[in-house]
Length: 272
Image (cartoon, rainbow, N blue to C red):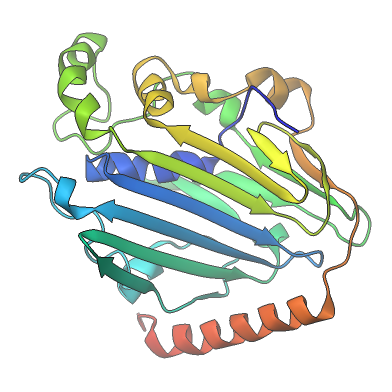
């Protein structure tokens, strides 16, 4: 089932800013989340960089991203462990995969820094005992989407660019964003019946795709072009699926994964 309009969660907005901070469009980002029926989850971020396409004045945006110190900087509440990052480099393509394990998605939330304070940007409400097969998305997106995406990565702008400055920069910026893409995938235990705001779903897989043009619209017009604001205001923003239990084998494999990740994280995470 396909939906022509879509919403962008805070994590997608955050990932878009990662791309912008790198100031290069040869970075492709995949955000994948697997949610289990008991509320536990695995979240992975996969960055694929075409290093050969980096302009000479741009530093590698993936430098140091897989260090324990950097992982510790992502202090999203509810994360139990980060797995050991996987980095490969083949034929000029640099690939980094970061994976986090979440025992209870109901206690996990994304944050943003606003006026020096940590603000809850997106959280999930999930009660498998009383409302199985339904995760509610709680956010303040309709307020955030009234203006263009902030351009924190551009020095001297104070996070904002005037329309005149944007019009001047666009011919220069557009080629660098040629291959930029961001894809988010959410996998739930059973066949999806509703996924407010996402692009598409097939069976139990929900997807949302952002390409260069969508990103440029969000950065130049207003972030609301990425958001079905009517859906967020008038509809209950939730993912709903047919109640289905995960297989014992799949759940056991996930538990083993999470245990191994916890061992690595305890041994390698910064101590202060």
